[in-house]
Image (cartoon, rainbow, N blue to C red; front, side, top):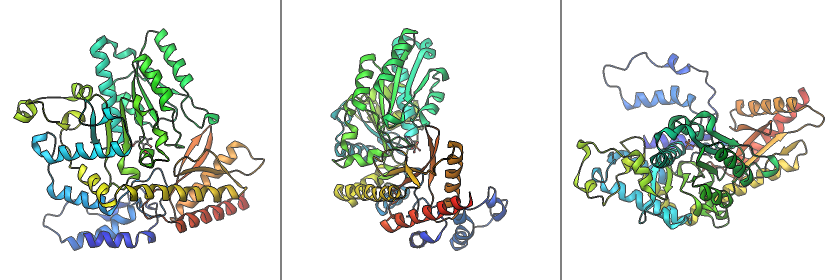
Length: 468
Ligand code: PLP
C-alpha cells in the first residue's frame, strides 16, 4: 500500500485534477454485493486504479487551486499510520493517557507559536482540543456560550438569544445556530462592503446590538473571521472584541485557513486583538501540512464547554476522572470516541520544525503574489479583492458589457479550465460579481504550475472572447 501511494504521488500530475466522471459511475463498475470469500489485496488495488481513482478529485495535485487547500505531508501521513496502528479510542484520560497529554502539549506548542494569550494554554482555566472540523469547533463553543447564558437567565430565554457574524462568515455558523436552536430570525449576518474589503465593521455590530438590546433580545455570540472563505478578509478583532466585552457576548475567532500564516511574525498582526477572544480555531488540516482531519480549538474557560457537554455514566467512571485532576476530552466535543490525532500534528511540528513551516507558508504566498502580478499585467482581467494571504480573487472583465454578461463569461471560463482537467479552481460571488478564486496551497505546487495555470486562463479567455 505504501508503494501504491508513493506511485500515486509520482504520477499525480497525469490525472485530471477535477474528477471527470458522471454521477452514479461507480455503481456501474462495482458488484452489487460484498464478496462471500476473501479477495487478494492485489485485486483490490487493481480496482482502486481502474474504478476509484477516476472518481477522485486530486486535492494533493500541484495543479489544485480550488476552495482552500487540504494539505498532506510525509510527516502527517506517518502520524496517521501510527495512529491507525495503535488505534485507541481516547475519550477519557484513562483510555490512553498519552493521547490526552500529547494533545494538551502539542496544542500548547501551537498556541505559543501563534503567540496566543496565556489563557488559552492548558495550565490555566482554558486549553486546547483537536476537533474534526472548524464546523464542530464552532458548534461546541456556541453550545457552551448558549448554556452559560441560559443558566443565568433561564431556559425560556432561548428564543431571545442573538448570534452575530457577517455576510462573509462561513456557513458553518448558520448550521451551528440551527443545531443549537437559535431562532433563524436571530442570526445577524451583517453586511460588509467592498470599500471595507469585506470585513465586518465595528459600527454595524454596535448598531445591530443596540437595536437588539432595545428590542428585549439577548446578544449571545459573535463569530469573527481571520481569512474569510470568499476573499480572505480579516475582521478587526480588537475593535470587535471590545464591543463583545461591553455587552458580555462570547467572542469566537475563526481562522480556519489563515491561522496557519500567523506562525510567521510578519502575518501575526492579523491576530491582534485575539486576547479579547473566548475561543479561537484554526484548521491544521488546511494549510499546515497535517492530513485531514485536525482542527485546533482553544478556549479561555474550559468549564463552560464541560458544563455544556459533559455526561458521566456509570460505565465510564474511573478514579482519574473522579479525582478531577485530568482532562477527559469526551466533554469537549460532540462524539464520545476520538482518534489519536495529536500524533500527526506532533510529527509535523517535529519533522519539519518551525522554520520550515514558516518557509512553506511564505513560499505559497510568494507564488500567489506572482500569480496576482501576472493577472494584473493582462488588461482583460481585473483583481477583485486585495490579496492578503495566498488567495487571488479575479475575473475576466471585457469593456462595455453588462454585469450579467460578465458573470456568465466568468462562469464559462471556470468551466473551461476545470473541464480541461489541467487545473481545478473554484468561484465565489462578491457584491453580485461572479469571481474566480485561485488559491496556492498544495504542498507540491511550484512556480511552473502557477505559470502554466495562468497560461491556461489566458488561452481559455482568448477563445471565449473570440467566440462571443
Ligand atoms: N471557516 C472558514 C473560514 C472556512 O473557510 C471553512 C472551510 O473552508 C470553514 C470554516 C469550515 O471548515 P470545516 O470543513 O473544517 O468545518
